[in-house]
Length: 333
Image 1 (cartoon, rainbow, N blue to C red):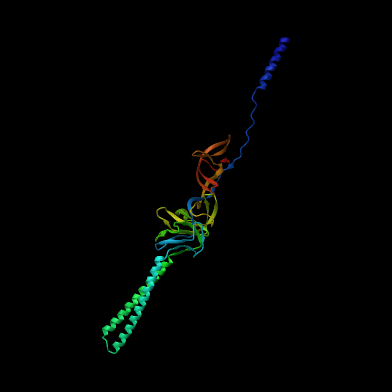
Image 2 (tube, helix red, strand yellow):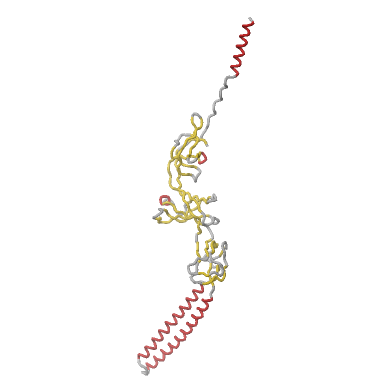
């Protein structure tokens, strides 16, 4: 009797121990909700690199060789139209002016004498005192004297014009952005002295592919981004009517804020028409080296699927998917 009870107790104990070590059932996985992928009509944009330039830019030179005697403008100086930027030495010009003025006086005196002589010859010819040939010679000398006076006056005007080159003034309101000479340097014709850029709105100079430029017109707006990340919607000021035959691009100018520095690079997104395509948020893209993928909702949960991307759309917030996704798929951000 006791042995039977002992066997039953051991069996019950083994049964209890077996139940305590059996694995517990795992809770069912929660459903994952994704964003449905749809094909839609999108606006395409072509990224175009450009440069910020001033509306007007003048490289100041001189037409005479002289020493820089005074320099009143430096890099960063704001100048007004007509303001003196620098002066050149005029010692040679003063000497040439004195010689030209003396030549004019001599020519005027010779002309006056030739005129009086011609009048005398006319009187004497009328009295039949001198032959016709002497009267003709007198008038020839008068004509020559008139020509000599004209040459002397032209020389004086030329010297005075050269003297005006000694004072160099600002061609418009703006800022000096470059200086190539110091006081005491010798300036030569064609040698750059200063560079002045006009103040006011800047321009973005863009070389737009012919196909994209065909849809642009003055007044349209283009999204332009500078290197620092600053972005504006810039109105188109002008679209060139001809294209560069080598690069197959058209020169397009857009208006930018006046405080954008010239010479910096910008990127413009030029509209390039409409198309129907699948797009996804740029934040949903997973990158593994050169590979790009997205997390796709499947029956078993979420899996990573590799895809091939196309152009950026909506100013870079979304990207076109060329292959790897179909309309109706669901992705996870």
